[in-house]
Length: 382
Image (cartoon, rainbow, N blue to C red):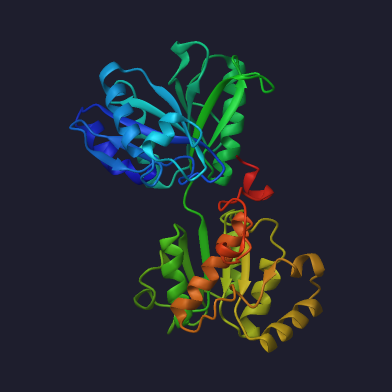
């Protein structure tokens, strides 16, 4: 929903009725992830995408039907289905798409959700998308970062189970479809609930106010991170040198990272890029970073000689094999990169590969599925 929120809210505020189609589950090589949305506007406009072009035409038609009759639909598109073949879903994937009518009456919570997203306040939205009783379809509740729901959904047992699971998704920022028994039984079947988990963007902390940092900040912003550039030298750490960063901080890197961790602003989605390649900065910083319990990625720039020297210094500081194994050094994948921009792409590629378990090999040299499932740490909230 996030990518179409502005248009959706504009129509909602104007009192218009639209259809919202959302990917709620994917299987195999699906082109868009859960949470991807498409709007069918009041005049038939199409905004957003649920499949990168494969099934948009069919979803558009379904959206017009839902606007007309008001009945939400959970539709599966897969390569083995005649309807999917008819609309061109030939990638081998399967999509479950939930299409519902949206206006002030059917979705009164939208204004509150939009305000939370824009303010960076964590909020989860749980919607019943499958249930034997059609009266339960489309029922919705909001869950805050403490796991507290704004209302009872169906029953106390269902409300408690969904709120608990939704708060877990919110902690990792993952959208997902959850399955329960028809009254919220955890081991049952019959009810499916889609959870939008709108967490603040994950953080990228870039240490070292050098030209490579500007390029890394740009690609980090492009990937959806909230980017902070930190350096102890005020002459280099200026907003004018890093216009793509969300903030530029003048602090000793290790002190800043420790303060952020103690304040609870470092989590399992945070990535750290250490570009200083100066031992007086990066060794104290990496001592703090590698001892943090939850960080998605820690990479450090430098030559092979710099890496060996840094590695030895960290061992002397008391770090063990398990901690040192978390360090991606030298940083990035082997792309032959030379310029700051090419190096930033190399670093981004390694972050993406580590997140999803990719190998970094050319796809033409591999067989099987193109898209990877999340690694266990990523899947914990799905």
